Amino acid sequence: MTIKYSIGLDISSKKVNGSISLINESQKVTVKSSIVFNNTIKGFSELLLWIKKWHIEPEIPLVICMEATGVYHENYALFLFEKGYNVSIILPNKAKHYLISMGLKSKNDSIDAKGLSKMGAEQCLDLWQPAGKYFYELRQYTRQHQNLQEQKTVINNQLHALEFGMYDIKPVVKQLKKVVQLFNKQIKELEKIIKNHLESDQIVKQKVDNICQIKGIGILTLATILAETNGFELFKNYKQLVSYSGFDVVESESGSSVTGKTRISKKGNSHIRRALFMPAFTAVKYQEPAFFELYERTYAKHAIKMKSYVAVQKKLLTTIYHLWKKNEKYNPNYILTIQEKDQELSSLLGFEKAASIQKNSPNQVEAIQGKHPVKITVGFLFTNTNLEKYSQVKFVF
Image (spheres, rainbow, N blue to C red):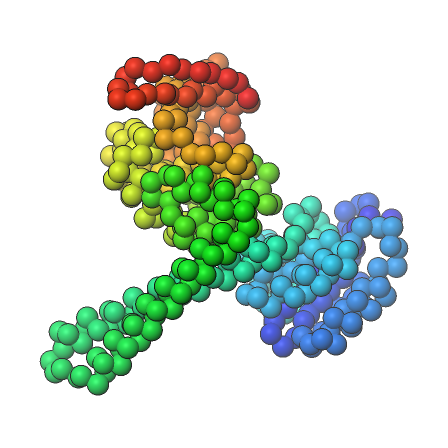
């Protein structure tokens, strides 16, 4: 008896390879059909006819899986989503490792499509939802801004090299300077467009104003984070956001082989990590209370500056997430209790194993990223001039 249908689509700029599989109650996966059609308007109709031909039992669930291949998959994903189909978009490296686990050594579009269909049949994959037009436009603006900045850096490096060359090649220098001027003009125009775009929605504008109270977080940084996360729409909790951004912690331990070191995975959205790089330095430089205290505390533990700055980046991201979801204004006088600090170091940050905590101890704190005690005591520090004197308010989630 069939319990699930799964379609795998490998989409390129010119053609689409499709494969449909089904899985029965014995967990056996069978490939039923494959198809190849052109990536054109006509191809959408051909895909629908092919799906209806083989999905002969409409009451049995069907999932459609595709790789995130640049932008070529987006039109098909949106088209199928609007038709009411369940769509899952798989990262290329995840699909690649799945095919390797099946023992497949060859790789082509047909094999990839079959692999995606089998993967969708065997696994319960997260369903995809399209980004809203508002944040989709914002993402195009912020990514174009980044592209211009990177190209400007390349041209400035060329100008610097020409200054130290054997001969002064004035025509080339003149052209490069004009290019830099053009980039500067376009960057300023984009920054104005981004600002106007955020202000066009009053709810977004209010939340942006609340979050930008954090020293180091500016309009462009926040716009990038919102654009890359679709306004945090699809995240149920901050742990999912941390993983999506590549700030989740991984460790290497097997049997008696223990390295004792942990690191962030960096397997996530690089645009977010890039956007938070300089704000972390600014927050520490201007001694923004919660972030500066975190930097000092973690640096005292391992004496590695960059690791502490990454901890600050991660805290900035989670703080932005909570302020956005709760629509609250940033309170610079908020600080964690001493107990919460210890839990944050070993659990929330996860950059260093808490060697002093025994596995069988009743006071054990979970040190794995993404797992936290159910009850968390949170303290608020209210102060004017002396951080040593404060009144503390506690509550339990």
